[in-house]
Amino acid sequence: MPDDGTAPAAAPTQIARRKYLLLPRWERRALQKTAAAAYARGDTIRTIAAAIGYSYATTHRILTDAGVTMRKRGGPSRDRNNHAAPPAPPRQPTSR
Image 1 (cartoon, rainbow, N blue to C red):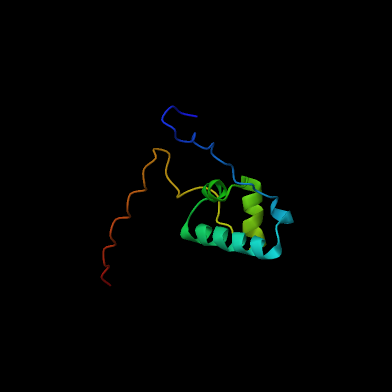
Image 2 (cartoon, one colour):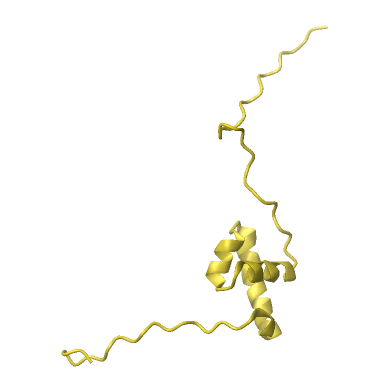
């Protein structure tokens, strides 16, 4: 106990996280809805996993159980020099 008469600061509590498959159906559906909305916004599986407190694999399963269509891997295509391809020159009209 500190000398000023106040109570000591409480230790941070950890959120008790239960196994996904052992959650009640309504709780799984709510978790699926939350994760699917975040994925539709453009969040990555890793950021969703960190936010909801489950592993990457479990988060992937949550999303597939929710019926989410997964995005392809990787980002936009780039050339070897890490630059966008130059635009094509404008076409000249041909006379006949």
